[in-house]
Length: 223
View (cartoon, rainbow, N blue to C red):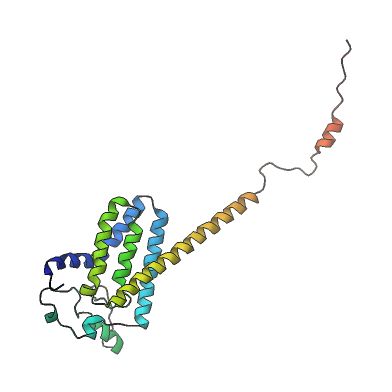
């Protein structure tokens, strides 16, 4: 990227668009009448985030900036987004010197798996059926995924792990949701079959044979 600094602003914009994309995706899916897909996206988004947080807690990774002891001088032509700003929070959470974890002014501490990568893929999957947005969202999120190693600082293994988690979470939610819908459909069919008749039944109602016995015979007329 140092050799091509002119394209880095595009990567910076794509990398920082992660929070800007969430609300529009939800709104567009709702306005276009794709309620089932909207539900899948929200549940997959939540599950992916929870899984990455849990994995990062068990397998913390400080990324290339901390592992290789990089400094801004190693990127003379560009200014990556995160650099080593997260390392103070990352190490402080583990040695007890940092105890106030807030969103405002906070730094991302999840490196493995890459949450940027995972959510970028979920954005693509969620918006894919909408053709007039697909051609804008796909390049944007591909650029975000490509920018993650540079502006986020994870290794390529972290990126691949993020892709894998996004795919697995989407499949799990999709199959669970499909199974739930099928189960509800079966329950509805059973309820229809077992529904009582709306015609009242009388205990002493005579049968058709009894009615035939009570009907007087028809006599032939005399000519």
